[in-house]
Image 1 (cartoon, rainbow, N blue to C red):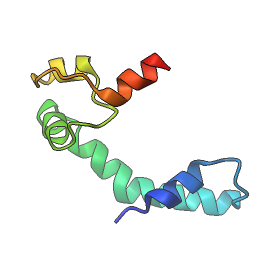
Image 2: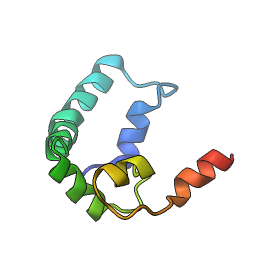
Image 3: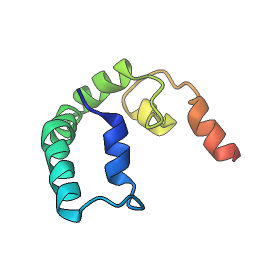
Length: 84
């Protein structure tokens, strides 16, 4: 299971984390989670399946929904971002 709290810590470059340790942990996370996820969404069908499982993802832009032939529904988190 991915520790999202730790990922945020590693990506917060204001935190005093040893550079080598940060790099090793981020590299391991890419091997464990990042690359497998990218592989899973590398095809249109794979991306569509992921989006169907995560319909409220902030990555779900209307143009992506149209490309994947998914129902176009407004994404509230993106709307809030646009509104400020």
